[in-house]
Length: 588
Image (cartoon, rainbow, N blue to C red; front, side, top):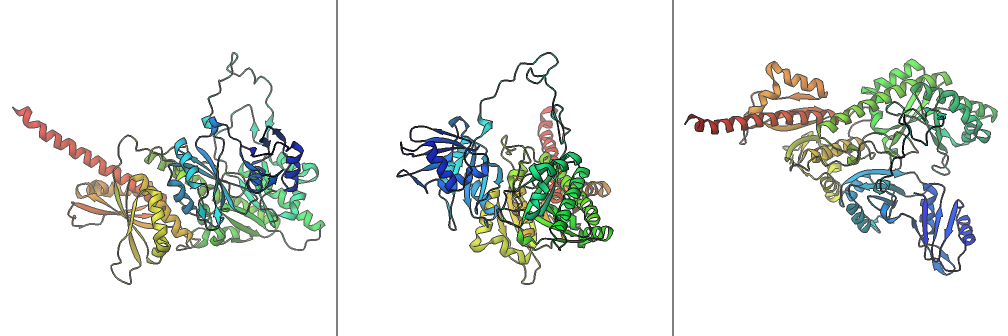
């Protein structure tokens, strides 16, 4: 991924000329430079420096009288579904970018790349090679504000021909794998690690203490990882010149807490030696999608942690979220012991929220088979449904398997959903000159209309969404996310909205169940409130309303379960009608 092609070179250019150019531009001296006639291949140590080289050199630098071109060196057979988009304005909303990408095909994954550049960079995976090709053609030079997008192919290793499995000796082990495996911080390389959801502890530390945490020749951090059986990544190169640097700790909950304590202790000792008078708070980074559940209803969870640990806890504003940073900063002030106790409680709450989201995602994937929730980008405050499991700030690994069109076998049925939003949120949903609602409709593949207000003083407005189950999921998810992002619900609240769906009057009794059994089971299963109002008069289509209230995943699960009941009723009615049509022939 870090090999670059340097083209349009004068025949007189030498390897030394190229290395001198890299040095002048403060680029790391390339590990390897392979010079050919008129072009060269250059290996850079990491993706960040490769991006920097492309951004600072390509089309901007003259060498021996010729302006050079720099791009990724990607063999033709590996130019497939993966592209990189650079020079994205950092204030660009994710939903706008998503809508733009979706115009050229099905986006399976979008991953932000951590760079030192002022603009943002993302790696995008499309469903097909053809879609990626169209996206490169259309997005190259696409103007947004004062930025012109730059797009390149990046290596798609999935497109490489399969590597033959090495022959194995008796016992099943590869003939190359006979030596003893060396154990690592997280267990042995030779034995498969048990499958578990890695939820690392993310900290922010003052930049002036990074050297002390690493120690001479890295001895201090090695000691931390050894003693706590953890993997500790210090993202030193991130946000050059920033006052704070992120640290990611991978381990068991106990290992993360132990490493956190050791790092806090190292910083405190360094502060004492340098006579820094200010107390050093503990700062934990958490994805915005988890923070509401940490805070709890009316702030109860946070107050409880403060009272039990003797600390003062504050959380950064939603306004600080950007395309670079979907995380909030949780600042804990108190003694070292108190901060460590608070860390354990905070991480316990965050892990619970994360595990619940994993479970909800698995449930949704089962309800709409093959649905790639990560590719949907339903929450505009960050691309994925789930927080990043690792890596520098803003880096997003894929969560769900690629490919999510579960409706290839038959055309999915169009559904109509009536979603109620606060009246004051209508303007934000529509956007300037209707741009936001248009982009949302395009992204989701749904029709989205806002019904007229019944009177001037109504507190809620009805949004009518028409589309397939997949389109409903995307559109509703984005609306929930937009309301949270625009602060129509406080940081302490989860977004809970009321949704109405119509069901045939013949199916209403089945939704309720005998003695209310089915509707009660629905509520217990989904955590949503489900009401079938009594004494409804069926409309002209012989349909009645079912009301569903709850947070996004609860509402979605309830909607899907109710649609299943409707489908069962319809199938039974069809069988009954077919049986009635056949019976006269039998009587002859």
